[in-house]
Amino acid sequence: MTIVEEQPGDRMPERDVTARVESVLIALMQAGNEPSLRAAADLLSREWRGQNKLVEFFWSLADELDQGTRSVWISRLAPPRRANTDDQSE
Image (tube, rainbow, N blue to C red; front, side):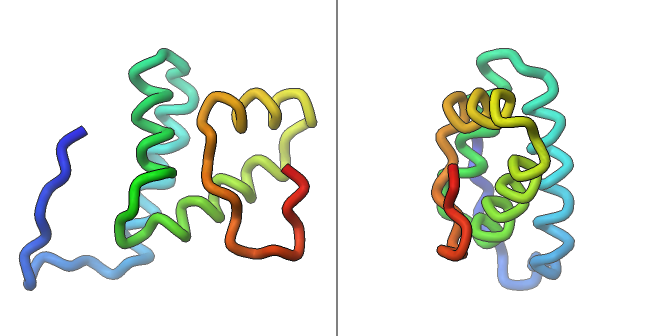
């Protein structure tokens, strides 16, 4: 995965960046092949400007899944724990 350096005038609002990456995350998960899943795991685990919001997005998706599917996605992507400690029933 190539990391592009941000230039001072290049910043998009964080919500716009995160919304785009949420779509990419879903597409990578749906593709389901190993390179796509590694890329999805990298998006979730590497530090970047919208990482915390993307991790929370992942967990909100996971909360809607049946337990079996949820367990598979968690084991395949190894996402960071959600920041909110109220519900960490992974």
